[in-house]
Amino acid sequence: DHRAALFDLDGVIVDTAVHHFAAWRRTAAELGFSLADEDEELLKGVGRMEALRVVLGIGGVEVSDEEAARLAAEKNARYVDAISTITPEEMLPGAHDYLVALRERGVLTALGSASRNAPMILERLEITDLFDAIVDGSVVSEAKPNPRVFLAGAEALGVEPAACVVFEDAIAGIQAAHAGGMTAVGIGDPDVLTEADVVIPGLHAASTLADHGITFT
Ligand code: B16
Ligand code: MG
Image (cartoon, rainbow, N blue to C red):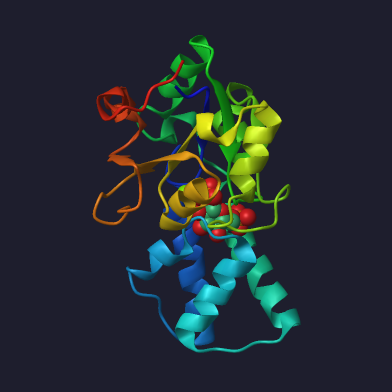
């Protein structure tokens, strides 16, 4: 049985991926190329500088370190501007209730996000208190699929990796969970998240996990 649940933020608790992608599309446009819809998947769960490298690679553009830092800062300013007004009502269906239900049952919860903006988003959603530990992009610099962000969460909770379930919407995040020796629940499309142990459409469907043998003590 599992004793802890680790949550990705973007795409699992709130749909900020659309804002990330819109901001990267503006970066690409400025550099003279465009991003295809399919490119969004490549940017999910990946840290900010790594995401910029992916974007530059798509456009076949090379820039100096200085220019890269400027582009990343500019993208972040646009992203922060876009999410500065999000409200608790914009949380994805079932996310809030599932967090509350787990904690009532004594299951430990942690956030494992690549985003350095995660604490601000949790504050705006008024759910900071629903996590026993928060690990974000400012704490851990290794990007998913490196398991560091989830291993740090498990350590903070004092729970061994095998007793942790990770909820993730990104391929890189599923890979990170498995690299850390954890159970990986995919949130989204089973045809995309083929490596997940089970895929559900959202946390509103988390009650079906027991049918797939994923249970908490
Ligand atoms: P920031 P997650 C990730 O968050 C996003 O999925 C990814 O698209 C983004 O590049 C990354 O955070 C870094 O975000 O620029 O805000 O630090 O899915 O791990 O919660
Ligand atoms: Mg995500």
